[in-house]
Image 1: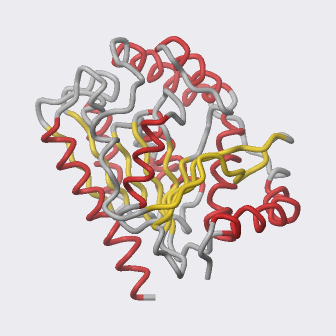
Image 2: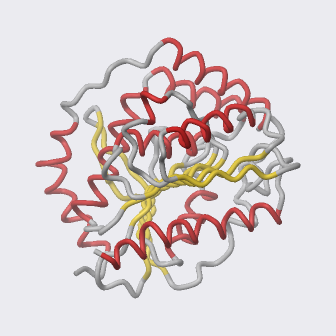
Length: 304
């Protein structure tokens, strides 16, 4: 049982010195040239899609949580390459026993106020939320800066992978979450899928908002993670053909998935600061997200 962030801070100190740091000794196989080429092509498409967007917190993100929450906007949840990594940690103020948790992954702008507000909003629905930082504390103020931050992750993905591993470890070992899911938008949507790939048997749900996907059956075969994918039919950055190929691969492999391709909307339909924002579609996508997380994190936790 726990009632304050102090518990997490003090517990994390010991955990970092013992178990989480041990994970840093693991190494990953380098990404194939084909994977890198695909990621870089996606990066350039994202740059075009976000060229006219702003970084101000969106109207949707500023919706007050349904219930009071307690947050720590700078909690050390990992240590990668001898550097502490800080994220936004939040949970309902009336929480007594650990609740299901979500690893929230930011867009290509970084862990900004928009994402922090969305983390608070999700926590108000009854979840522990850890909004991670894959950009090492950097927040982009322009599309070009965001492009460079995303490129650095593409070229050196091991930092992000280890970051995610320790985020999962923090929620599992320190927060004591009975079930853990992932959720991300755009760049973070692709990394929500990557989180499932990193934890193919342990992650309990993955939500992908218009993120890069794959139809490589060798990558998808090990997954035992329910997937919710939310995409726009007019998305030039994430072509609908790639989404359909992803869905077909999941179907062939008999995976647990729900792919929604919204007609007549493009990339980042859920972000009011962008040109493609659709309030109606964003609202529907959020409802689907809550239903999906409720089914796979809350109801499933109650059954165990």
